[in-house]
Amino acid sequence: KMAMQDMNAVLSGLSGREQKELMLSLEEMQLKENFTTYNGLVERCFANCVTTFRSKTLDEKEEKCVTRCAHKFFKAVRRAAEVFSTGQTPPPSALQSPE
Amino acid sequence: GDRSFERKRQVAAAVGEMEAVVDVMQRLNRQCFQKCVMSSITEGKTRDDELSLDDDACLDSCAAKFKLVQQKLTEIAMQESLNQQQQQQGAK
Image 1 (cartoon, each protein chain N blue to C red):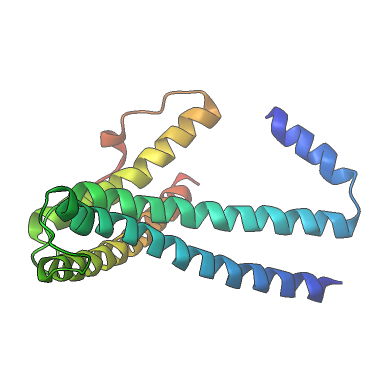
Image 2 (image 1 turned 45 degrees about the vertical axis):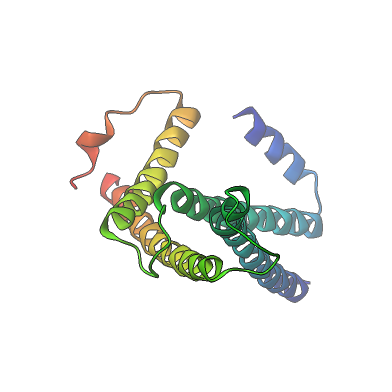
């Protein structure tokens, strides 16, 4: 919350052009962060799940592992972000999603 | 004015896309070189500096599987983002 107040103070002190330049920089940073996280996840799930290299397709065990890895990652990130930003413990994940 | 910022944004997006592709290739090479080639060197399975038939087969498989994992994750990222949108709408 402190950081957002500082941000607004900074923004209000900038000219229109400077504000646009700032937003552009933030957008670039966000783009980079997005693909780095995403590609990092691809590498991590691959490294841990794919262990044999005799065929060009994923076997059932590997496919299941990769699917689990990816779904759980996105959910874990969301949950951690919620705790980090609200400071509160959300209810157990198992109760929330009707899967 | 606004148009020059729009163009800067487009350039940044194009550069970002290239960076993402380069990044993915670096990771693929890191994984596949380690799993297919480095391991055969340290395990004493190589006779010379060329890629063996086993090296080739392993690299082919590794690169194909890496791409499949990437495609799978694109699917799942989209599913999760739809789920999240639905959850947020449901909460309103």
